[in-house]
Image 1: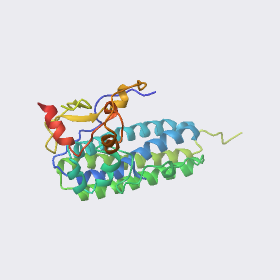
Image 2: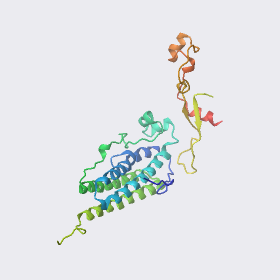
Image 3: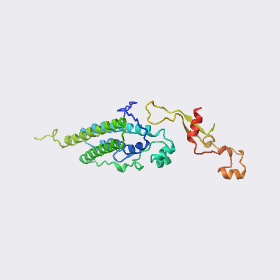
Image 4: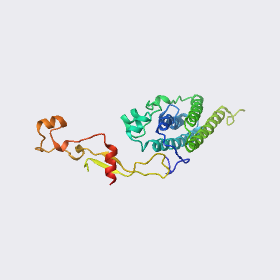
Length: 189
Length: 76
């Protein structure tokens, strides 16, 4: 069960009218290394992982939904006022044909999100290594998104999200260390 | 004003990056309001019906590339 707070995890300010940037931001919305994939991956893997790290997956998976909401806010702000002509000019004509100005879980190239992007192997080390890789790939995506805009307010929110990927990566690495330890096992009989 | 369109005023932030569209619209076509088509409805002239795609004016739903203009009308 979740408790919802009707506010964003970190403020989202968009100062430049640049609908094309919305298209690029979709990579973090419905892309292979995006926030939706991250949230669903962690919240699903947690059922078959040792008890010591279930809470970590719950917490990080939940935070990914908070990030998804921030990305959605950015995309919405950039496209909500765009006319069909402006959508077309921003390379979003194909998006408009299927979705009008609605958001949809697809990547920057318009490929719809698929569960094939995520995995639950049942092997704790394999799953956590996938999670670490996902965080590093999401961090890289945020870097390229920051490179693609000169809107300093948008960059500010993206920099916050990039930093969170770094923290999450370390937490997953710590989870691996916890699973490597034999601390709680009886060594002498 | 077209009875097959509904209008609403979405939240507009003072910090929006693009010029806001203050009124948005969506279509409520006639099939929504006819649970079962009653018999003996008035009919178009057959040639008109062929062009419209329906025999009955009650089912006719005109649509053109005019969303933005409709929304401005709804602003009045």
